[in-house]
Length: 517
Image (cartoon, rainbow, N blue to C red; front, side, top):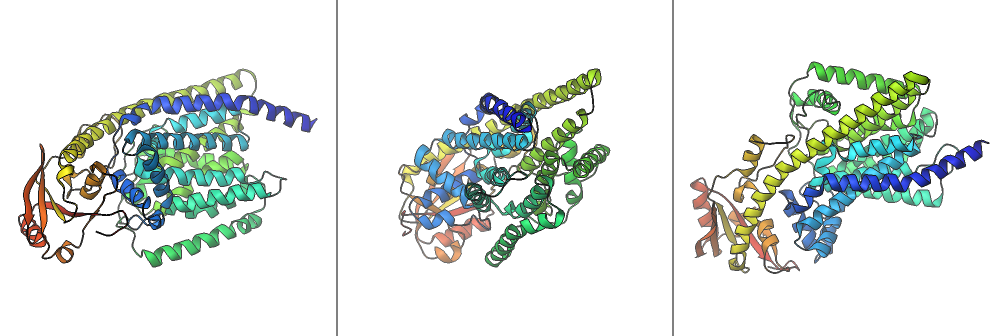
């Protein structure tokens, strides 16, 4: 009888899964449709620059981005460059496909954790259409946050259920998911925590066996951390003491519950944040005490991804991406558990209240996302204006000598958007040395170059590298780029003179795809 019931439930899930998938896909693309009209933003162009180089220099496929080791983003952007060229909408489409895949995998994980299909689909929908997940769906440069979540969830989906054994197919899927997470971003190192939690909370193993199961992934993480700090001893300037460190997690939980507006740089705890912490603590206690699979796994997703960024004194929305998925799973698990003993009118009342809160959360999320995308659209328009300026000058940029690019305007599009935003606050990054403080000059002219086989680079050590070398001086003003001097005999001396005058600038140079200049 038990087998017949299980088979019936499985058949019902198979029938409902396509409907849930179509609903999820339609919702994601309907909510995020404006993204397809946006230009790329900020770091996107430097990431695309690295991906472009990788098409000619395969070693660049594994090259770090500053102090960050995130080759999966380079791989995906290289494919984007091959398929879409300079059409930014194609890059955004890839992001949305990844966002849908992450949402679908979360639904599958919720179902695996024994949540009803309709509740699992609802949880995936609320998460996918929330402002807490929108930045990763919108911004190409932070695609790594999406792929690392896909990697984590992929491992959990491959994990055998209680009573099942590891098969070759499961091991292969789990290894592929681990490699994807490892190649995505540094926060993958919390994987051992997911393994231990899954083994204990899902398979029902005792704590000692759960810890043993996490040993291989823990050893891999230790090797990775040692290698990473040998190669890059610093933290990229992200670590600093700040009151934000104590306030950001409680304030994040408060925002999850819509108790107060989201603040990426919260400097004080509020009474709403204390209430939110109390609610989550009670939910966590119930999930752990009863060993609710969805609750325990949700709690892991809520907390573990924040550990590697705990000392970062700000909270961009990409950091809330995975935690909000865990929060939704945790609340859904507690709701299902609470309704089990209820019958009659009390059950209907509880279900109605839960459905109402889910609908309100979904509606509020969609409104917040669309308002925030309006802000992204304003940034895109500023980028489009700058790209048009660059395209007008690009055919005149010399390819055989360095170029001094002066910023001679003080326009601040990002500051203007931040001061008059419609949606949620964003941590826009201004590049004060570059035109409009928007796009790195080398990446800008590479993206707008008439040919596809020109690779520009920024010369940081210009006093030494271009000393005594002739070059060209151009400047960006509010109306566009102008050529100040088509040839100076010593570009380093010219740059030093402008530096003394307090003018911001970059020194760039074109190179060939093979690397020779």
